[in-house]
Length: 385
Image (cartoon, rainbow, N blue to C red; front, side, top):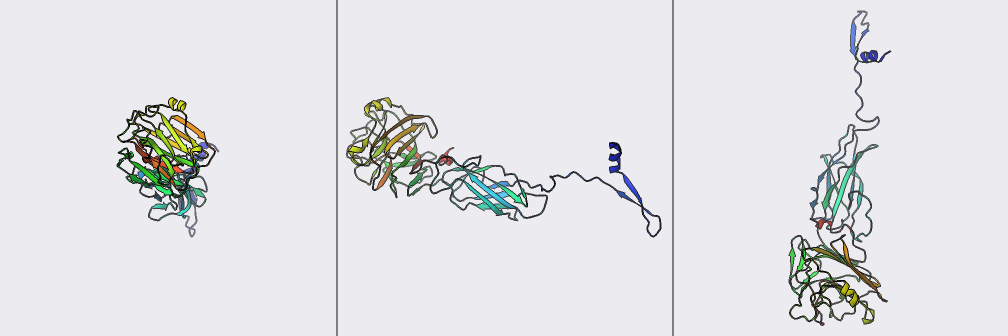
């Protein structure tokens, strides 16, 4: 048979002689070829669900969001369940590097039953990392068939801080702080907390001594050539500091600070640190030659990332924002551990008996991290505009 004949036969009217009580009546039967199957044999047309809420890139006020999708559709009947994924990266790969001891950035929840309303929801059971832009998606399963993932959507977790044993985070952009504001300070919208006087600072009383860790923050408003303020004899403003308890800061044997010195900073506009690990015999700071090679005219309109890290020594790093060009990196070792009995940390520093100027007026802080763990790369990502 040729192909033309077969094609004609497929649409032909077949006349069949049928005997009905011997009447000799004839009946006609139309033969119509079957349409090609829309899906492979044994599978259903199971569509991907669609993200419904939260609003795309929406700023939330919770750390346990409810994620909702519009349900999948299918060419076959049967119950469906859903899988939800949350991650701090759009590839939904395992986060590399540091992580919070208390909060999650990756969630995978399977077996969520479909809601008959047409929308299916999942409320995250664990608290997610604060002030973080997170990515999420969902897919459905029906029988042995699994749909494609929904298009990736995003949300931002609540911008809140915390101060827990071994770990502190303070975004400072939401009009609150987990620290104590001392002196004149102002919350600046989307910027952080500004120190408004030479005797202003923020104090964090840590519930547990961090013997080895990191203290880092973003700082704006650091201007060069700061003059000595009235009532001070030495121009050595502190960007951040730490010590034991509430004693005199100048003489505290557990004092550590990062400095951006002013006009009388020997030399002016140098970056410097000083660290005390339990006594004068355990005092470390870069020498004069290093200070003279580390002079920088910082731009008050730019944000700089200051990071101090310690163990059996101290390292200070300063860069042009988080992940930006690092222009200061100095470290020194010492033969003792850092172990203040009552660990207290500062943005700025309190005025000590030595008469040193303690802060740069107008310095604005945000995105503060102090922990025995390195800073997670995604924390604070919700603060970016």
